[in-house]
Image (tube, rainbow, N blue to C red; front, side):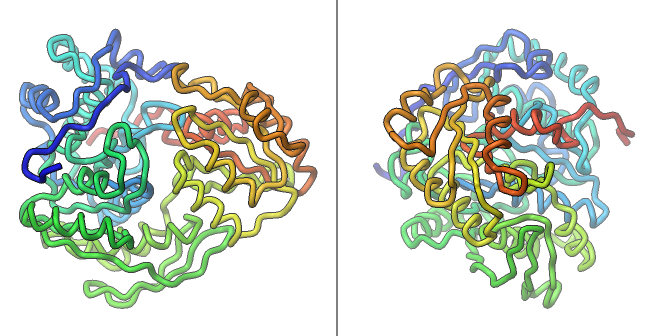
Amino acid sequence: MSHGARERPSSSIQGGLLAGDALAGVLFPGLSGQVEWGLERTKRILASLGDPHRDYPVLHVGGTNGKGSVARIWSEILHAAGFRTGLYTSPHLISFRERIQVDGSAVPDKLLEEWSRDLRPLLLHEEPSFFEAATALAFLALSRMAVDVAVVEVGMGGRLDATNVVDPVLTAVTNVSLDHQEMLGGTVEHIAREKAGIFKPGVPAFTADEDPRTLAVLAEEAATHEALLCTVPPPAGEVRLDGLAVRLDTQRWGSLDLESPLIGRHQLRNLALAVQALEALPPWLPVPTQAVRDGVSRVRLAGRFQVERDRGQVWILDVAHNLEGVRVLRQTIDEIDPPRPRVGVVGILADKPWEAMLQQLAGVLDHVVLTVPSLAPETRAWEPGSVAAGLASDNVEVRPLVASAVKTARSRAGRSGSVVVTGSTYTVGECLVCLDKIPPEALPTSFDTG
């Protein structure tokens, strides 16, 4: 493939609403647009609204895994620095309202409903995909909430992702691995090229990726986009069941001793990337040293090696939905060493490499309960009965309903064991509801719109 005239990634994914999300149904009634890779529809919609995405500076982050972590670290640090900070992320675990936040709180439903009505004539005319419509609403909402700065997470890929209409002041690509190959390409080099599409002329770009193959592509793309790419090496640090402790040497803030409730060695890399990238912020976005410490210490990230203690058991909820994510989950479990017996509640989508993912999990789990999240798209739902039959293991059983799987796992884990919930955002989200551990940003809220 030539670098000058690139092919568009193929797409077979429908652009409709996410099943079971009542708020999304209210905001985007009747939306049925197909995914058509490109920025044209999003640009036209935003132009008709007065280009609200240009009303505030943007920090833009992409990558295969970890981009949500970096986005939230940035958001918390900027908020601690005194900026009214917007955040747009995806996907959500339980409710659409998780996607659009200001200063760590969801935008009130009534405001989203009011502003979505301004969008409807444009949506009827343009027939965008769900993500394009959601992105337009997010940029409009953050403008009307009068944020000082916004952190935006790429949805998928980068170059042709709807969020790539922004003109950022800072960009980052966390890492690159195989995922969404049907959309982004069959090799890590192809995927890296798509993700590097968020680089912009003269805008600082950062990555924590260490793979020479992808680093070469990212560097080449940065040069093409006239962006200076900086690589952030993995830091040393302490990884515990209650969080991280790390020392980072920075030019802007000197030597920083930081503690974070995030868990896992991979989060050390995300933390280092987020903090050291912020050194490149323009001077009119000043971040004092204490804001870095405070912001890092306040980051809470539902569903990313989230640890809950319930009735004497340790529950670990992680949205690892691809092979690399599950590898990282396995490594973190090995390092943290939660108590045994360890029981998995696993619900993977059919279009993921579930065989290899289950092989990884088998190395750290004593028993596995396979399930099917009720909100997973029907076309992507796997058949756990067939999966279990193929595994032919006494340590694997099937409970199609997540609530039943949770009950079974609790019993199998005994009084002081561990339960690991993973496989998809749908599985983790539904389990959080079963455990009554719904994150605050998923709940309706109201606050001063400033």
